[in-house]
Length: 380
Ligand SMILES: Cc1cc2nc3c(=O)[nH]c(=O)nc-3n(C[C@H](O)[C@H](O)[C@H](O)COP(=O)(O)OP(=O)(O)OC[C@H]3O[C@@H](n4cnc5c(N)ncnc54)[C@H](O)[C@@H]3O)c2cc1C
Image 1 (cartoon, protein in one colour):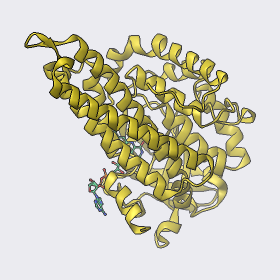
Image 2 (cartoon, rainbow, N blue to C red; image 1 turned 180 degrees about the vertical axis):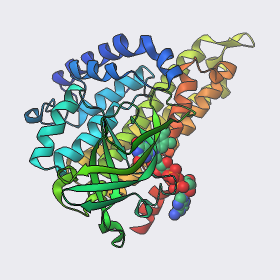
Image 3 (cartoon, rainbow, N blue to C red; image 1 turned 30 degrees about the vertical axis):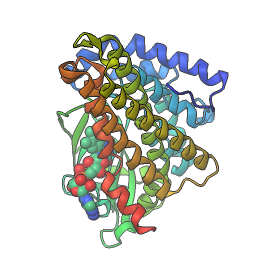
């Protein structure tokens, strides 16, 4: 794996800790968790104890006070172990920043320390059965009633929901106001009357990561749980965070490619056909050369994106470009790598098969790649 120039000795200590946690606390249980299509709730508390939840959140709110690279390290280590199927980053790098950046003082103080210890697992619910790409078309409503909102609607494909105690729900507080009518509500689900956790959906890949339906029927949410305390800011809050989320997805795609190529080169050095190692066939070497080149170009582009991010110039279009381009290349490279594994590549017990199934999600989640091109196209 190509090392990024941004890592300090402190980052490497953090990496050792993360690697130990994955090897000791996750990998031995992978098969059982895959079968259950979820991780056990206690695992999140153990992750909190090990200091790998919310590494970037300010220490004032119980977080690690780290930077972008602490989040990257967790993804790198998960990818190296072929264990991307658990979305720590969703809890720590996507949801916690909403609360830290846009929440009221009371919301930050109340939720972030518990998210850092794993006492609270968080999910974010935007997608609905009838609205995914077109977020403005959501039908979930939050009607103000005294000092509460009354929440009605249905969500689907919600990651982490099986274990979540806190769900950030996108809802219309003003059905007539388009994007300006969308707000984010911090819904505490334990004991919430009218809330139903639906099916844990069966997926092609990312088996350990639970993905669920949610139903809200007259759920009363205290008005103080409106993120930031002002109605109509939800769409803006979501859009503001998307470039960083897409940079994280791009980073994950690049590391997946690098790992897949490394593993496939190793396999091609061992496997023999027609009296020679696979790697000794020129046609195979050319395929491997193409994959290595694609991964190397993607790494260089990723580093450029990181530089833009550091310079505060990584905007919506840059995020969309990074996400669609790297996730498409990732799927192409992993597909070639799977092919070079022959029949073994199609067995779920081989890492390349899991990488193939897990990577496919990158082209759909976080905004589909078609929508990414739309975003870029609009700004041309
Ligand atoms: C495993 C998994 C986990 C997920 N986790 C979460 C989560 O935690 N929280 C959450 O809120 N959501 C989550 N999602 C939902 C995900 O963000 C949506 O699936 C995604 O945004 C696409 O929405 P959709 O599925 O409704 O597809 P649609 O919007 O119905 O799109 C269908 C197809 O049409 C294309 N399309 C749509 N509109 C256009 C257009 N204008 N031009 C060209 N092509 C278009 C799309 O690109 C896609 O190929 C998850 C999804 C999956 C599969």
